[in-house]
Image (cartoon, rainbow, N blue to C red; front, top):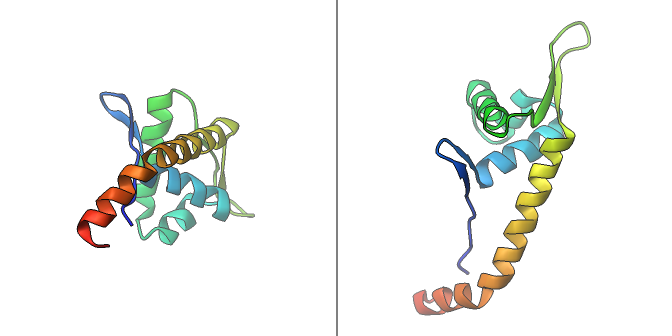
Length: 112
């Protein structure tokens, strides 16, 4: 079946799509930017750069990070970051519901 993918362009250099949202979800799940990156097969540097791009684009943090130390570092979504994920997923669900008849037609036409 055909599948819909949503990317939201919020500015010239600021966009949110499935990859960034999945990264935020993995940070929430693993409590670490590096562990989230590993779970997604990306380097810590790449994961950190994506988080920083979102922080800069939104003008507020999507992730609250703690510096490592005796008990280790970590990261968690800020309340705003959790809202970004929730709103993106809500938009995605609404778009999929609306697009379902058209997606079914694509699948029927390709024989999938």
